[in-house]
Image 1 (cartoon, rainbow, N blue to C red):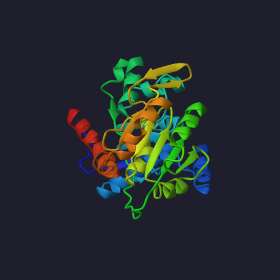
Image 2: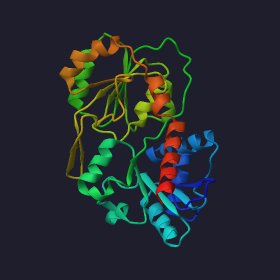
Image 3: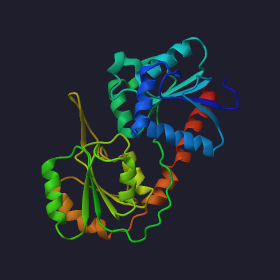
Image 4: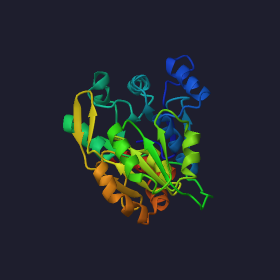
Length: 308
């Protein structure tokens, strides 16, 4: 049984300055490069702070240790679990893309809980290893609440992330002179610039083949920006293919936007999207906040305590 007073260790690398992962972290910080795992970490840190739960980041392991990312980090944590220094080991979401990878490390019996960001991820894992069903928990990370000041937003911001060039051309032709627009290409802008654009554009067109969660979408929603999302319906990776009706935006619903499947569908639905009333910020605060993320983690820990 774990202690009632929680003290959670968060890890994205081994808690030592003498590691490659530590050097990589310093380089990312130097260039102000934000990765998905770091966004998850920062959301959890903010959420736990808001709930006044004690935690440490990349400093030590404790009875409750949560490995957010890194195969080497997980290997280290598993060693500590075997030594008895960790009682509850939680891992994910940024360990492996598929459970077969890294010598199937995610199947290690010393892992107590596996966190994945959405239902389609869990379905994919369990299709390969059904025994993971009870071990996997779905916990989407939150995003920081932002109070918007610009009441005069206008235009479409097009977020292009590995989309089809033909599709992008069709979308631009449909928009024409109807509404101002700007295209940004994934990997070619800094996060600060993305936030600035979200503060000035009223809508976001999101072009990505698939998303395990879609934090960039949530960053739009928390700023009150509804999203029109391309959904081709399947994910591809190293010869694997997985179909899901919400593969490109697992948390999109009628409160925060709409899907379209191709250029023709974009044309048919654009006016409906522009004329609809959405409440993306309200949805994000209720379901996808930092506090909700941390609260869900604490519930997982409490339930584990009760069962063990």
